[in-house]
Length: 255
Image (cartoon, rainbow, N blue to C red; front, top):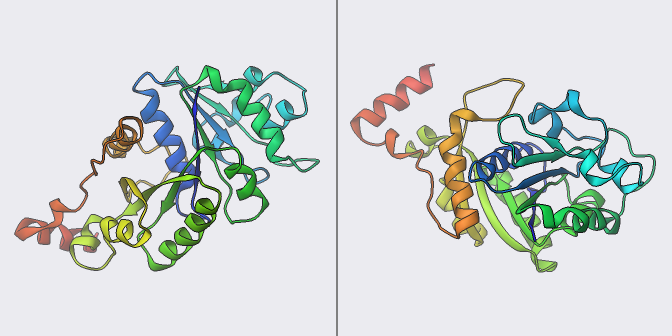
């Protein structure tokens, strides 16, 4: 039976979809069977991030409305054969209920070790639909006061539904943390008071494919923590400490 985990943040821009995609890849590299399910109906882009948008034939709505079997909507990843994507659709003709999505997940859960649910932004009906389908949650938060505040509201909603919460701090700039210009991930963990799952550094890469191969180690640590229950944290700060670190910080600022 799969672990069903919703990846959320309560607001847009925190990096939920990127975390979902890359955590799925990291788990698949451990030969675990992983399904990425896009529940951001109408504003979905998990298929774009996973670079499978040209392969979509059927989607989640087709499964819900019995136009195809769940397996017909799966798209296998080109790099990791145990990783699959179930895309969503741009337009749904009718509201999709939590119960309908739960039925789909029940039909496929025996085939996977993990089902990672990409949650839409906000705390409205889309959030509730995604959360009601999961047993666990990963709250993605950026190390900014506004991000922490939004994450705190999201965690309160999850706690009210007895959902187990893990926190990932995303887009951490090690140079700014070392220079005292950004909250550290550990300060964020302390404020939110939930299980600390991982730290993902900011990427300087700007491209259409958001699978962050340059940050593979950070996601491997994240996947280890999730699967093994460990608490190792990727270190993106220490290289910016000390005399050499100050030089690196100065160089990074001038680039």
